[in-house]
Length: 503
Ligand code: FAD
Image 1 (spheres, rainbow, N blue to C red):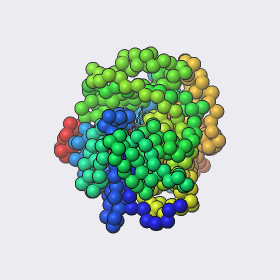
Image 2: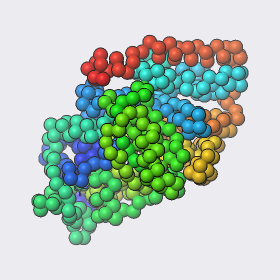
Image 3: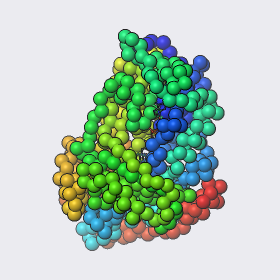
Image 4: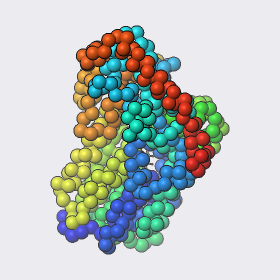
């Protein structure tokens, strides 16, 4: 193990992962004496070309790298995202929003769902979505920033993310990174040089025969996993038995249809279709199981369900759900697709890049490589993948659909232990616990469990402390406050154009 300070960092790959790593590392560590960051990318190979929807944590990353929000919205043609609308997942004709932020307003110090359940018992039929400012504003095409300190306003419960053009995002980050001193090298890595005894990577040979030396290598080479997978042979944990979709076809189209700050996911007979409205176009894709539908049929289904004229040829992709057993091995850390991939149903991949960067920054090997720190990095990364896998699995297994082979397979999927326990707890008592600071909050679990047909048998006894009329009146007031607040918000287009973010 090397025990001297790490000064030469080399990033392989200039997709979203590579440029996010370059921007994050240069922002935080760029001023360390003698530290150099080099990024190698190959225009001939290109990037995966998808990955446009995000979750709220990205606002923290953008703040970290000092990004001006309106400049970012303009440059990446971004729109806001207040949640994901799931159409036909429980059964055809049913839809719900998994909103960002939380539900209701504070009531007697216990979680809001218990009052909602009590209200149901008393005959209140309003869906849980109507208690979410993000869902109500999102469905009305409205947007504003949250007001976390205004505790009496529904806007204190709002949270948001972005939908952007991934190619433009990478370009934008490249500009910031180069300004911060990152050196970009254009070329194709044709050989990986390793120390003969330790196996540590020492350098990369490019197609023009130049060599780039380094001490810490960040593998952002995409599905190829050039350093971690191909060179160091770290095995892949295959999770396709829980997440059977293994293919996608993507295509952008002209703007058309609704212009809401929401990503839409519509269940199809062998998978689902995404719709991500940006300022200048809509990103669309069909994620499917190749065991249940062939690529041609999947492409036809996608093309038959676009809101505007296609703007490119369909882009077909194959993948396996899962992750590399260790994200950090020797002196190589993999970020992005090089480290693993879970389908984009909850837009989590870019977040995994972000959290990997944050973890690497806090465990940066400033005085050499330590097994205990590498172990920590790997354990936390795996934990995060497991949590996300379980949340995705919930969407497939909690369904009433039995109208195709694919859905019959999904509804019979055996939940993992962690998921089974969460469902059991919720079904029996309406309680939800957020384990070890996991990515998805209680509100997210609540939204998907309730909306996909898991009904609690009980609720917290404190929800009976208010009398019946008071309970119904309070619920009605909360719904009214959320509706009124949403009605008064500007449309997303006005919000952006008034601040120079364009539309
Ligand atoms: P890539 O974009 O593939 O970049 C790899 C880079 O490595 C490229 O620059 C390439 O040129 C370079 N490279 C490779 N080999 C070499 C070599 N030998 N020499 C030099 N350079 C090399 N994520 C989300 O968060 N939200 C979404 O909505 C979302 N949707 C998705 C939909 C699909 C169908 C798929 C497959 C993924 C989706 N993702 C989504 C994931 C997201 O696209 C990726 O996490 C993100 O783009 C990061 O990709 P990457 O940078 O790891 O890989």
